[in-house]
Length: 194
Ligand code: IMP
Image (cartoon, rainbow, N blue to C red):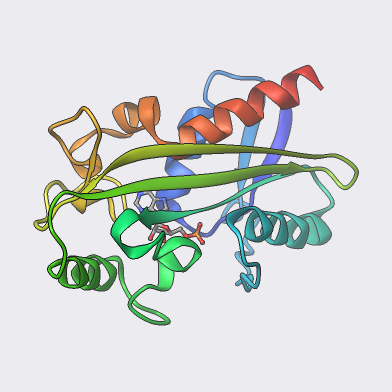
């Protein structure tokens, strides 16, 4: 069993990634297990740069193999916004609800459908090797909240081909299609064949 620290303080992501690695040869250690969830400043200009910043910061503290991700929502009519700023779209220390409300309001100016995609850039770093993988999930933003599962923009994101939002799916169902599941499943395969 190989232990991997998942460099996130986001409990929604943690629950998903723990499930993705269930029944594999990897054990996911969370920052909560380690009793130290540092705030890491995301100063990169891409998802990939921010994922690396998180992985390196946590590796430097614990000197153990780390996985990390940076992810967000890219809305076509907003030229890819909120993108890397997805977590703080409505301002520093805002809530998921603040972000969803702001996005719905901004998109009122545009015709429907509001095509969008979630992007996840995942990375493995063990001090010597860096492995990266990307996953995307296309869909659209709707103007009312549906469902209470998941986190972030899940209640207003309808994945292509589904009549349920991500927040109306269970974690297992979301993990069959999500950007994060795609990225981490690819990453896991690459770590395994390394
Ligand atoms: P990060 O922690 O810097 O990667 O920020 C990711 C942000 O993007 C989250 O706070 C959410 O706002 C949004 N996001 C990323 N993945 C998801 C998802 O699977 N569902 C809903 N929102 C997501």
